[in-house]
Image (tube, rainbow, N blue to C red):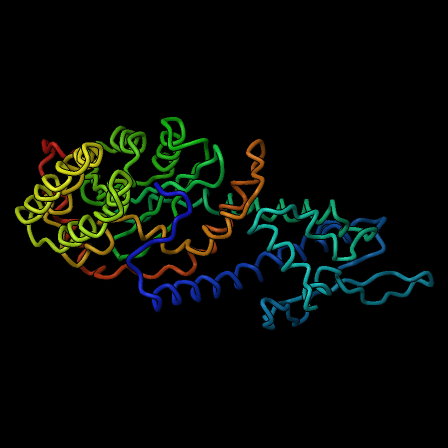
Amino acid sequence: MEQLNLLSGQSPEELSLNQEVFRDFLRQATRRLLCQVMAEEVFMLCGPKYSPAASSDYQRAGSAPGFVRIEGREEPVKKPRVRKKDADGKTHESQLLTYQQAQSPDVLEAQLLSALKVGSSSRDAAEGASLSGQRGTSKSEVSRLWEKAGCKFIDELRSRDLSCHNWVVLMLDGIHLGRDLCAVVALGINDDGKKQILDFEIGASENDTVSTELLNRLYSRGFCGSGGGRFFCTLDGSKPLRKAVLKLYPGALVQRCLVHKCRNIKRYLSKKHWGRVDSFFDELRKSGSLKEAKNVANRLRSFLSTHSLKAMESLDEAGDDLLTFWRVGAPHELKGTLLSTNAIENSFLNVRRKLGRVTRWRSETDQPDRWLAYALITAEKGFRRIRGFEALRKLEGMLEKYPASSKTL
């Protein structure tokens, strides 16, 4: 587990592509969230849709094509229409203040979304929006609107039925959000090569309680491996996570993330040896058989034994989990995906940068859950099938045939 570190091993072109994909879907999620807030303002002005408030001067009047401005672009939306009664009994159309602000260069939506991303209060973000004193759009009411919208993302993420997919791969990784605040994220890959955020759990660390709570929720929602109840599981190295996985899924085959293990080993070495360690791990990834992989691991151990006892112990700590990929005989087309948890981390590059700027996490509330759920669902919309996904069916068959008595279980 790393604390908001950027991943190595990506070219500038790949990083630029990941960032553009994320920005594109962030704009879509922003538009969606703003539409929810406008709908909430209509509710506050007019009351329930089919039971309008008798005391209100406002009434619904359908919708019309409109647009909001996101990052300088005009994004089409259906704007709700509201009419207000005059003193003479006639009505005139009244523009929603959230819609008006979303069309200006200094949009309310952008300010509030910025608050959502970087951790400032949505009340503070509404300071410059000139909405105080307006029914349905005061600073306090805006804050409540966005809190309600954020909770919907948590519900959306955790209400999905996981039993309707044939899961082949489970990945678990931890992200430090701040001091004494850590999120463990679960990602699944089905037999069609499609990735999906499964769930997350926030706690002080990747401890037994957090790990068990996350895995219990996945289990209760129907997550199960397609290979006779067995799946390939890539972990960041957390012992509580490994324990929780094998308790509920004793048939899971656990692979240690090579990126995390390489980083952990280099912490105990002088920087002049880092290049040598990187070359060993590159050679390990290219190994074509279990015999070759074992040979590389043994040579790496010999190298570490002459430079750092702690580094050697870190390598030994991974045990058999370091070579599970080769022990199973997994297709080589899947090396880029299964040997690390990058499938989780790559998609959250910008999210991790933003979360790193949060100065105050209110862990006594569901604030971290709301923000993280929003970020995860947004990033998920940019997911594509993994490379070599055709080989997943072959891996599925290998998992079914793998001996249950293996010491890798």
